[in-house]
Length: 148
Image (tube, rainbow, N blue to C red; front, side, top):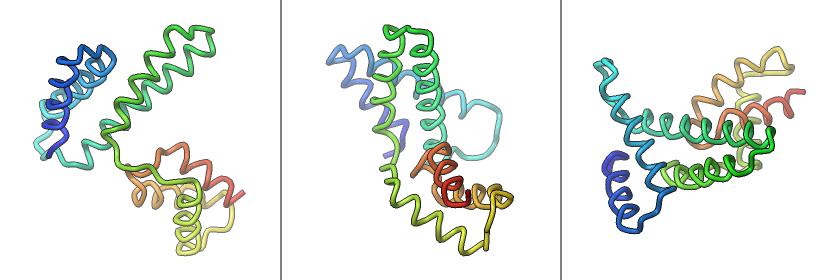
């Protein structure tokens, strides 16, 4: 089932359950999908594009929540984090810290990276290989720890 079909199914369920947080989150995904499909790009909208789109929405919500918390606005941060919980269900299972370290260690060995100067090469390969399985910040932290 494509992401769009899955979102529509969950949207109907959320409407019946009168779940406002889920409705907002699902409508955000639906809107982003429609925008991406009608953006003028002639290429087909792939599963990888769908994952990137949901990751972007999750990152936006997390960033907003962090900003709200820094400003002492817990009342605004909580709905953002609640939406993150709904959005995350459309992402593949995220890798554990140990799994990330193992994969990134293999990449470092394969490339022959030895210092922080090689971080760009490692990040490029790791980001491609771990797309959808881990967010960029987590990958970056592990790479810095292993190279630094």
